[in-house]
Length: 283
Length: 306
Figure: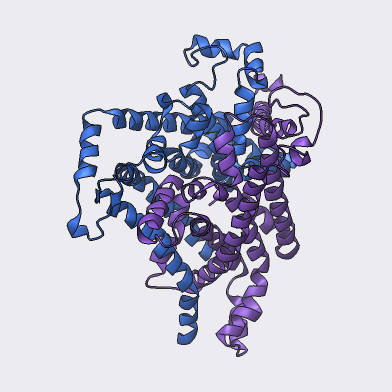
């Protein structure tokens, strides 16, 4: 009780608030994961441990067509989104970082704007774009990929540019002094140095794509373009079984494993300090 | 060096082209539809040429808001929800960020990890977790009842009926917004407080300031930029949120602007009205968006020169 006499000396109450906050933010999710392993059909009463909602013969993530297809579609979107957004974003980051002068400020703002635009505005805008300007593409998988790339792109640029700032211009200047043409400066000097950041940005893009909801929902067409997030939204209130918890758990496991792997790669090649600052970086 | 400068611009070209078509043109489509017309099937007919623009729908909506129809109610409710949620987020988030930045000691890395973790848990899964807990027979509902919190909320008028947390309660929507977006607020707060030079606080203490006044006159003012940036960062998505209210309330009594837009755009067929409302929301949020862009760009420039 020493903090009562001198509350600003040793901030035990701050530690208490922090502990309560951490519990509050994590425990409900842990309980949701626990109920994914419930043996019964209830999502509120524990009826014993089982993996039936993951791999059981009926109504499980593995065997219920609706659940399995949603998971498959989510992963498909994430893979294609990363495959497009990463090269596009790395090139844009390189271009922006070394491009000084007229136009670079405008392009920089254009790149950051998707990060601060509320997702519903982007969802509405892209919906109208595909309904009215590109009816040939229309709604569905292609539109969902394009929509996800449009806002994951900015995350890739921000992460790669952070690494570009920290490695500085010295390496490519040295390469230029030694007579390397721009192409060699890029492919033999800059890109190898950037590799950890590229891996990290791909992982972040992957995780954002998997967790995305609004844009993906707005650009969906029929049941075949349903993702895990859309399934959660549609069934959270009326879900009949813990299978919904199970599919959310699978999605979470994939996201976290990807991010941890990328973090380890980054720390291995770019140093622990920078890895930590990357992890706390919020755009 | 002239040719290499062009190499860099060439590298930026595909990304710029992508953003121009799928972001800028898409935003322009909202304008063209909002200032367009609709056909007999109430499908939108966009007017691409600004000279043809039909301001009728937007004007009518503004007129309705002025006369205090449902759009005014929903807009005011949205502002109320967001302001309270951001305020609560600050009250909870600041002590947590302050502790982590200045006093966590050897626990720092672990606490930081716990603060980052929720950012990477699907937002809808986090809502699902609370829906399970707050169901009438849910663990959370029972605990809130046992600890007398339910009774407290009932007495204060913050809850309509025992066990009815998920029945269109504004309280639940606001708390869900706090739960959903607080992790995004804490990190910028943490970074801002962490950056404060400890020597400035020591100097204040050496000059005779009490710990409290050193906090109020040094630490707090120096963390204001972080508070503002974090508040804007979570206010923006809250203003466009529709899924939180949908999931934890599922009543039109707690509709926010996002719910209204969603009803027009996706569920109903009044896309022109929906586009007009999206346009008005965007104009309202532009100030916040540019404030945030300016502060991040300034931070980016100082990082480049450092």
